[in-house]
Length: 305
Image (tube, rainbow, N blue to C red; front, side):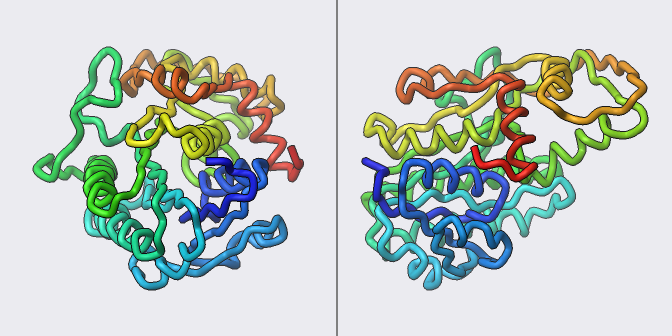
């Protein structure tokens, strides 16, 4: 698909990752429709030329109206909150919401979709998790810390079934932990560790992180390249020590406390996710922490990049 002049609808366009997706599409001169719960949440999107249409994931008819005229839909809206571990909330947003988005897209005549999934769908850990790795199922135990993972797995599995039923060309992308501007979770928590009077310097923790701008770029590449149709991609960072992130933070211009306190935590928080398919098929690039943080901080300052 040539994105220059193409009409692309994005759910959750006013959210964290959604704003990056919109930015990348606008850079490619797409006409972007933001299908969102609250069109007034981010006024600058309208100023940038985004058409905002109001619809909730629970409103199938409104979603279909929101997708009218779109050549493709990026299904990005989902529930992820460190303060909400409720199964009903996650199932409603991530599973029922996915059903409504795909049914609405089919009603609107959309035949190309990208679903933003997550590496959280994978069950268990191996040396290198590829896209064909076993996923969580309905029978997986729903401990509070698993509700997001299970709901995302069920959401993606449902998306593939609905895409096949309606003749929709689908690609799913599975990011790992995402950092960037507008992030309501990781970055605010990280700032509490580093921007106080004492700079708590985490050492030894191994955890893959990916910049939101790179995930958005991967989504645009999936739309542009026919090889992506019918495939899933890990859009993930490398499994490395958070020390690299910690060191990149001040180098990129991030504020830190005056007194440094090293905090060694020799733990591995995640598996290694193989992102080779995205690099081979799409030419996708996962930027260094320094590059990602430098752009993030510039965006927070209101820079136009």
